[in-house]
Image 1 (cartoon, one colour):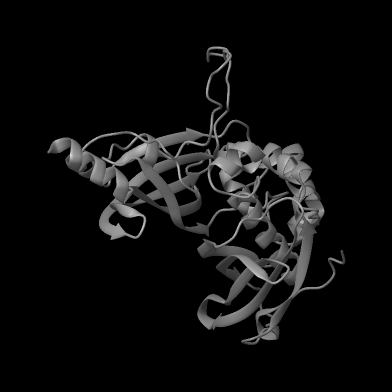
Image 2 (image 1 turned 135 degrees about the horizontal axis):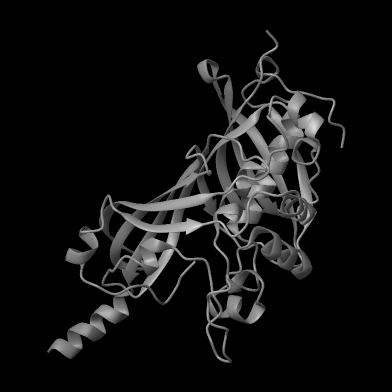
Length: 190
Length: 143
């Protein structure tokens, strides 16, 4: 997916963010039955460990669990919370924040995700509160067919209220400038 | 769905096939998905915005794709066993309303020490592959 925005800055600035926490997201709601049911509903997915205490226990869990791929869902913050201003006509709708695009500066106008890898650890139980801590792992410069830029790898660690790791994902984002832009910039320089 | 079955590590061989599942994509399903997975990025429920970004129509998001992969492996393996890892997830085509997607898998590797298997998963619309990924699941042992 290509996005035509992102935080602007020079590569020198981008470098200062490597190995640093670039974003923290606190899940809007704790893990709860209704949210799990609605998530299963849209996939026509039924499985007793996600709704039945006994079934979950006999499968080896402490209680009802959430599907592991719901980690992202439970880690996303609210789209509006009581201390936020009310939306005005013409405001841009809120979208999911990707820190290495929107909070890390780079001299690029476009970006898209090239790869995602997720590993799951501690199961999510009812009542768990999920937090996502994002780190910029590294920057790899490359010239691609779409333009010149760099791969930024964002590592997201999902933890519960006890500090146990629920999941770790690595998202690779290519931030770049299309060749036309570069030509335009050069023209302006001359 | 019968949940009495259970797949054990000993039952699985390289090239074993997972029985495919399929689901029709409708705009209503995409909206239900966005509401329940909390990804309200516009191209997943707003056809006009999706078209501006180059997609033919609103299209299914990664959350839905990963969730359908989880459904496939969960229904296949039974209540015991767990989805451990998803990697090399590549979206090569859009999954838009009007299509009926099929999700299928083939075992490609057995990890004896971890009691795990690696599965190549694919989502397809008719004969067109839309997403591929490699997932690792941990399976219980008979002994």
